[in-house]
Length: 315
Ligand SMILES: Nc1ncnc2c1ncn2[C@@H]1O[C@H](COP(=O)(O)OP(=O)(O)OP(=O)(O)O)[C@@H](O)[C@H]1O
Image (cartoon, rainbow, N blue to C red):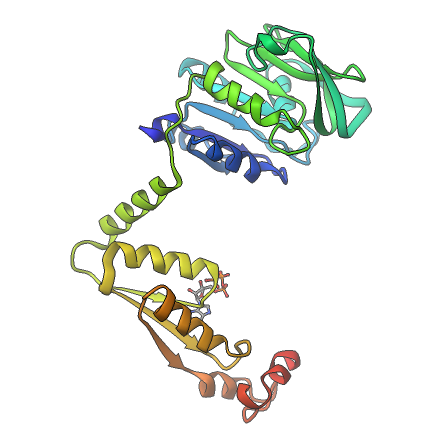
């Protein structure tokens, strides 16, 4: 059920892209972020209900600026997919559809008032004529809109702040609704997803767990065993915990003490896994092998118990 309601984010390099993904998930809708230059085949394979084009540090005029595949917008239209361009994403959409993007006369960075001037789907009628504070971060701006588009909000300086072509289900925000500096941004995203696009909420973080466990079980099969190299860091800890939930004792975790660990790291890792997570771990003491390989770089006799800090800094 939930996957059919997928909001796919095409990432064009904005520092806020992952925040958009998180915000959408916090609205109980599954969202996934993939590269903005993914092929149409990849995009279509996710079967998204909505695609959000992220912001990014580029200018659409730069020769190598990233872009969605050439036939993406046509594909979206013929498949009933809603598209929302945010900042660079808006500019890209405008440019690809024959509009004009140019270097803004008054480039807008930071807090800005916008005025909703269209009875738009993205703000809802209740916002018409309303001012709201948003967070801008752009040098370029949409100067001429493609056919079928209308401006639904402008900044206090007169720049285009929001556009839409309702018939083609294309929308654009020049500002960043996902940051807390746009206080009404979440409301706009909520309105857009649920009222404009008709997405239904119902996804929970727990769904990821169930899905991953199912994938692991399929991959490993009913009898095979798995070895996990466990460092105690976030990545291998999450991986080991998921695999353990899926296949239990058929998982064998190995932690290698290479002699270059932090103070009492070995003890901490072993304790965390065995006592807190109830996950058995085999510790391989490879201190001697590792340190002898480092002969000449560090003194092999200088074991971590005596002077581990010395080893670390020496390296
Ligand atoms: N001391 C170790 N013992 C066992 N496996 C290790 C050890 N150090 C690293 N690994 C394995 O190599 C992978 C990559 O290690 P790296 O130091 O690059 O950490 P990482 O990618 O940040 O992952 P993590 O968050 O699990 O540490 C780890 O996820 C783990 O599977």
